[in-house]
Amino acid sequence: MIKIDPVYPDETTLVEAAKIIRRGGLVAFPTETVYGLGADAYNREAVKRIFKAKNRPMDNPLIVHICRLEWLEMVARKAPNEAYMVAERLWPGPVTLVLWKSETIPGEVTAGLPKIAVRFPSHPVAAGLIERSVVPIAAPSANLAGRPSPTTAQHVIQDLYGRIELILDGGETLFGVESTIIDLTTEPPKLLRPGPIPTEDIERVLGIRISIPDYARGLSEAKIAESPGTKYRHYAPETPLKLVEARDYHDLNYYSAKVLEIAEEHRSKGFRVIILASQETGRRYAEKGLRVIELGSRKNLYEVAKNLFNSLRIIDELRTDLAIVEGFEEKGLGLTIMNRLRKASRHDRVLVV
Ligand code: AMP
Ligand code: MG
Image (cartoon, rainbow, N blue to C red):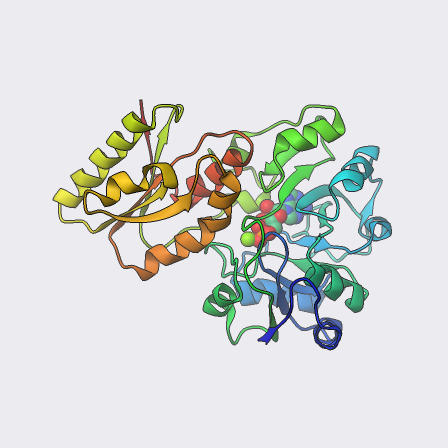
């Protein structure tokens, strides 16, 4: 592991990391979303090693990362106008576009699918590494399959130490949740995974509606052809996680009373309970002697999203029997948060009304 300045990355370090990529090695690197585990997208063997290192099922495709708009035509074909509209406004940044795959990209990258997911990251380390590797970099999140995505280099060590050549430690990532994925091969475009950029923002850029299937809300599993990544266990801590949802979160007094009731019911049966709560309600549970992890304010969902995966990892370290997590309103980033929480809870959800 090598420390690297996230804003002004050291040239020698980037060149060293790029050499590893060129030789077919694996490098974990920070992006503005989460840490990625990268390999040369043109090198089949290197790409296969990503799946091995993560224990990732071979039918779950990777995202290809580029550092110049001109590279889009190297990896995708027939990119529609909409792709350039999004690219112009939101790239570099945390948005991934699904397009028709170019022939030159090996099928291992896309798990045999005819479509390819492409992203142009804004993080100076990610961009610098791709630039110096002079190849598109295929990268999923740098965690073991099924675990919460890594937002620090320490998380990458927890999961992948000894399995990969290099970890670039650029500190905590900015958004802390994976990119928004939009499929532009369908009409209308389809949200495959909500992320840091709200769907509403992309609709405004495109001037058209984007369809939001149930699986993008974390409500069901996708058919494999649509969004393969949504088919598997995801983000889940070892500790059982129960998600308490409400129709709306206007009456927090009432809502938190219900959450408290559920927590106390389990505690009275001898369970060690921990609650992942918003800043607005956390104190109420703590006052009753319950352990609380505060995710952030309901008025600043960026904060909640950023703290989410780290909190899911901490749950296991604290050795409790049950974690109860509060829900959030499904608007803007709230949709992104609820997608992750519904999957992390493996659909152990209660609705309080
Ligand atoms: P990760 O960033 O670790 O979640 O992995 C990349 C995710 O991008 C996958 O799990 C898929 O959900 C999505 N993805 C990648 N390529 C495609 C594709 N060709 N079609 C649909 N979704 C894709
Ligand atoms: Mg992942």
